Image 1 (tube, rainbow, N blue to C red):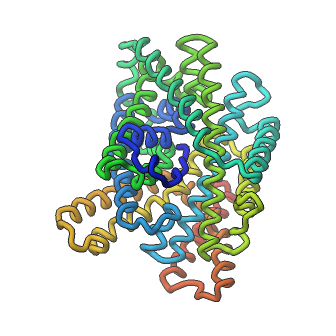
Image 2 (image 1 turned 180 degrees about the vertical axis):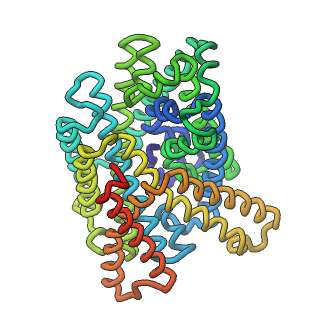
Length: 483
């Protein structure tokens, strides 16, 4: 999961960002905590060949999605309240609501993942933390949630300095990890890890099983488009998007492949999370585990601050535009969206309590976070495709540009639709279990505004979500869906 970066304040100095500066901001915004879990997540799913195929597919799909966000930012600069604004503009109020609330729920699950991840890192030094899901881990995580809540409520919102420090502490250790492992390259181990393993299923199944983690590490990819108006040259935005994305893709792929070059796949798969810690320690000794662990904690805490601000804003902004109940748009004396922040902190707290009853809390929260993010991403890509097919915003332009954008948006839409399949029915149903009751917020907002609740199409969509939630609850009760 990537670290969101705040849009810089407009001004003459900011409005002259060079290509290297824009590219660095893209890289810093996209490299997040998920990279530290890549080796084991790939190790349990596939070998080298499957990893190469997976990163090729994910790279192509996510690049198309990044270009979609860049195109939308330029064509609809008036829609600046977040990725969910595209869903509302393209498919109506209820679709926009589900996009916003899905994005918020994804951020909450991601923030819960962060605390489990930190405690699992501590677990390498003290058994009481386990895999981040013990009582001690939950108690300390709870304290952390409310410490950050208090800081943010008091107006601690300067993400710029924090993001610069965090970027250094997360990128530098990752590069050291890759370089050391490449120096220790063992051709025999790499060859043994190259071919597919029959016990992991077909190659198609192996690649599909990597898609959730590849999506998770790219969450926040839409942030690459927020700097377009600050570029020294407009064409630098597209170049920075591509260069930054390819740089990040290279880092992620190298972390995965370099691990296969020094440790047998079975051992990689059995490495406790965050798996980069154990892999590096096995190569360089105990200091390596401490080195990566410090990087994990600094990176994740910085990301948690940024995503908590993001989650609160995702509730606050729709409330200010009457798409969520009025009470969620309240601010305190420090200008913090306090009600949205309280709701967000309580939601993270609730999921932390759930981790004590989940068999694999770390991967469960990662998969839940990713599954919930698919709705806003799919609807944004579909909106870009709709614009290209209808010609809206393309008046007077070269038809070749419109066709090219239609192809890009079509691939992005197809890729995000495929991710729903990769997520699996279990997590899709669990997502509806979360989304269905939150529809009550939409009902309250419509009631406050005296507006019609649903159109016929929206009523059908609501019925589908509720039916999915009923099926999800039934699956949990009967044991067909296990946590």
